[in-house]
Length: 333
Picture 1 (cartoon, rainbow, N blue to C red):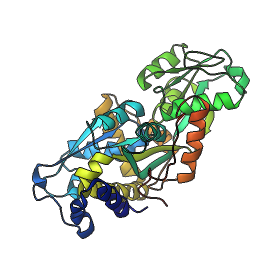
Picture 2: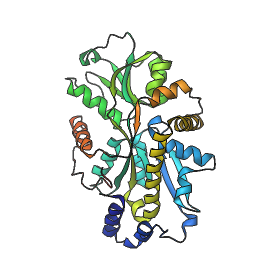
Picture 3: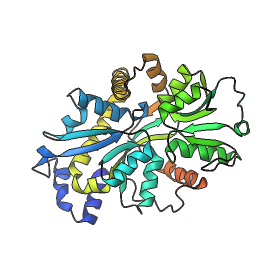
Picture 4: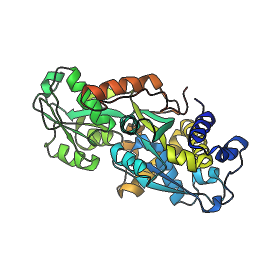
């Protein structure tokens, strides 16, 4: 479903078709746009490059998205540690859109019977991995029995990936223990605990994968180059109330994605600066180069992979009441 068609369908259902005039014609449907705000979430991860660049250029007063949204429109950026927190904010109406991993978006879609969220675009693939200590003797899935593996947050994309992978390889994994202990842990704490030897492995995303490799003598046990790492989603309420802004933001996101791929060195430096501003920590060029090499930025949404993600989540006790995904996507390749 194309973006304009998706917004039209939602607006029609909600009885607000008049808001589509601006989307179809290219004009702002709300003459009071000078006072309007679009609230967008993102994570301080390289996998959220579009969000980091958006937030950083906003701080610098040359906002990529603001220039394309029109005069007087403000973008407010909100940083989250992982997907469940961002999606709870979206569900509560605290933000309108967010960059997020696919599993938390699926969770909210299913919990709300398909009424609260729509996927607007892809953003990044790859950049996720299971990192272990070098020379730890971990060579097969069964070697992880009794080990402690961190994930960013319970129910986030890497958490589900870890639990489903271990289960698929014969391990009993529960929310509180099992053969392998998958422990939800914030990304900064993962690095500290891994360095102290209190974690045997970490299933996470960039730049934390590369930090574990370069700063804590880690090694990649399992890489996920084809993983759907980041997508851009919008709340249905935002599609109803701010349809023109959402449409323009999505188009600006796609333009930015193309720019990132055409200008990787400049984009990487912008992300490095943005990460430093958000985390209050310098990121070396070597770290950024390592992280960047594991990623692919794309606005495509691989719909079939979402069906597989649902099956993986169900296998470990999440998304038990799955529903058809036909309403989830506003744009397909």
